[in-house]
Figure 1: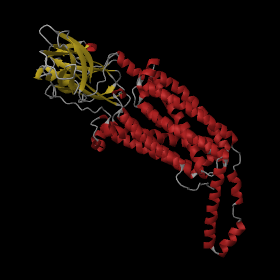
Figure 2 (figure 1 turned 135 degrees about the horizontal axis):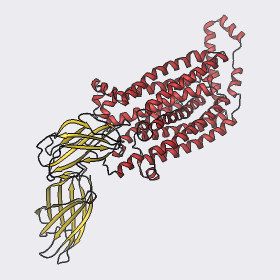
Figure 3 (figure 1 turned 90 degrees about the horizontal axis):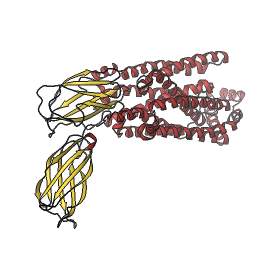
Figure 4 (figure 1 turned 180 degrees about the vertical axis):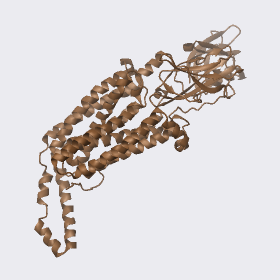
Length: 634
């Protein structure tokens, strides 16, 4: 007979699942607000270089990346100062000897001025990357070229994609871990409806999230417009990519997983002969492991493990890592469900899970160490990159989770072999003769009495279950484990969309740039005290640059006396220098507007960076001084 727990208010398991969904939304928001460091393929070089001034127009523009990327004919765009396309829209792959380089030919007869190069592609680990920089022909000039300020994979589409990516991991964990818990730890759980719902909900969540990711790939890696979600032409193109093939393969494997679930909760749950059930357990375990490993492989084949160093070893290690995570955390969710929703669970089942969880942690630790070395590579990357810092947070969460699990193991040892609930069930069972006499006298009355007795029995079951101190302590500690596991899964999801520390450091050493498309960010302002040494030679300079980005800027300079009143001087000059790129000084002679106020409306900054501003102030025919200060332009 199937034991089903009564429904008394909101279950902690349901609250935990609701928290998981909410946390997924927060994760998506965090990822959408991530800095350009979330790009996984970095631009490590270009010709012409970022900010370069060339004498004559080059025949093409070449870009070099830190890893393999996927590009289309419109992935690199070169824009004239007027905003018109200056390229032929045909990409050439010049990659050779492990160096990833692409080029786009320029149109002949290009005029002098500042040109904008914008690029967008998909890195080998499935994440969209983009950026922009400028170079000048002849001399820098004003430019009206407009490049979208939204980073690839950002915006509303990016938030939605990150939410469904988190949901796909959560669904995989619940489906895989729940099924493993039943087959390995508690075979009777196959007939317990709350556990059945948990596994089925995991399968439904993973299937729905996979479909959503497949539909969102087009806007996620391209336009960023949510309306392109149901673009059939874009979906056809996605299916031809590595990520599209992985997602479609996952859907086919989920079809096999549906058959596995049907057998597990159908023929297997109804099988009473222990010998036959043992054989079926072995078959289901083998089949389930193959399906789960295949689903895990769809992540390994399309994300971090498929690129970088040692991909042939990294992919099977990643599969083992994912299976260990799912077995541990999903089994934890199944145990929590059994403790809160099932009338009873044997101590042996909890002990088996404790052993299974220990083995999963061992595998998780071994594979995690290898993955950490592969993705980080150095102590400096571990502490100095976003990926390394997130990895430290994940390690800390695992340590806390293991500590709480140790507390759960102590409660497990105190569980009684035969629960009080099972003993009480015998005392509330209706005798066959009494039931028969009632049924023969009045069938309707007998049915009503049976319902009342069933309600009374389930009420007593819940009371006795909740009054069991060992069970009470165990489920509280398991609930704490599950709460930490939700956060751990969120951090893991963020890690999958963060540039590995090794790649980030290598790109920085190569002098690469991850400059995102230039967008207005508001005026930047600096103040500099000066003293020319002559009469009335002291004062304060206030310089404002708007919007403080590469391209055209409006500059204002005010000169104040020590008592903060506008002060007129014979001459003011300004120069900008970017020492890191050996650009400048770029001289600017502002126009006098009124006493103490100078302005220049066409200050052209060729590229973002930490620029040195030099201001020369002359207060008399012989008294002048030059002061400087750095200003961030980005």
